[in-house]
Image 1 (cartoon, rainbow over the protein chains, first blue to last red):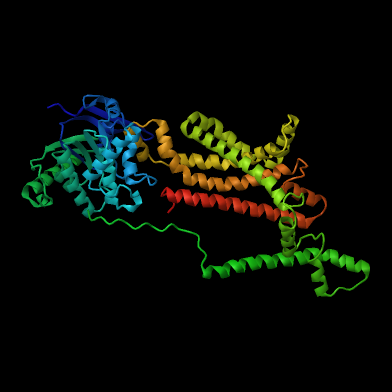
Image 2 (cartoon, rainbow over the protein chains, first blue to last red; image 1 turned 135 degrees about the horizontal axis):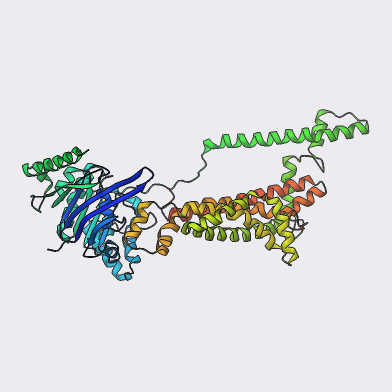
Length: 258
Length: 304
């Protein structure tokens, strides 16, 4: 199977006043269609930088990065991905449906098609009935669901998520994780998910990429043995605990370099 | 789907409570009392002088009552100013040259024209500055410099230069008003158009949005709270500019002309009435913008 996202010896160095910062160093990774890939590691390990490079929001200084067989920049113009940030970033002056249809307006979809798509993605994130509400009328978790709906609205095959639930409390987070898994199974999208929560990464992913800082690099790639069907209780099974342990060991090894 | 839908937060409004009345009235009374005392003190010298010449001895109560009823007091008493205002507003036909309403209208029309020009100029320059580093570097220093020159020095030059090319009347005053009012709009809009943070701009980039879209859908709506704050400053500045513009021309119309002719003839009551008319006009204009601001921002969900 052809990789959707493929990185070969990707490096990215930021020039700062304190000298060069090696955000990414020789990153090799291939992500197959339909995979749910989590990037985990301490801050400064380059997990967000890698995701942003895939989204063409950063440009690698060397190496080859392809998205859907294209340069990241071309892939973005071809609407290859939807991006979800840590904050919902909804416009207070637009309703929920107005927010979701904004990228569709920018991309030139017709009015009727916008309405049809907004209704569909609102249903996907279970926000039907909230279309006419303004963002401040919704809880933080609902706002983030709306921002996921916005990223899904234009039918990108890839969903890139940069710590999307990082600012939410644990109870809301659990529910959103469950909802995200259900959504992933239903849509078959490829998901790149940055987190620094081990349970979150283990619960969601088919593949866990463990990264470490200075220079930012991949120290371990773990394929999850867990079945695709994952009730929340799976977190108490020995398999889950063993996998979480493996990720923790990977993170610890990464730190051992320093 | 159990997430609670939060209740709409009540829009915060300026509401007068009965408890607030006492301090407000106290301050007002103190101001009026200080004013009366000042009027008595400042006008007393002339009355004593008159009495001495006439060889009469004034009792304190006679002195006080005379200081408050002079025709040309050094400092008119509050009730004299109120009376002057009332006569100027209600005592004349609005088309009369002695009507404050007519003079206020002359000033107001130039103020609004200047405010319009200044606001448009401020917004256009701000848009340019936000989108172009070159403009930021080349235009901003001149905008700042324009405000460091005293308007009293600029105003006569503008009037004279424009008069020499045959432009008189409303336009020269409006240009001086615009000179003062474009700057707050420029500064506020530059700040406002730059409020969208990195994440919001990245979102737009992730949709490959062109710059025009970023402007109309993100930057402009985000800047509106800043725009309205600037507009309040700008309209008051435009009024000041217009009045200053009415001074050097030897103009015969407008609140500025009223101030000037009052000072020529020692008509202090007229000066103070014109001053208060200008202050009331400014307050009404600022309140009007405040009203538009509240309406627009609360409809946009930005006023909370």
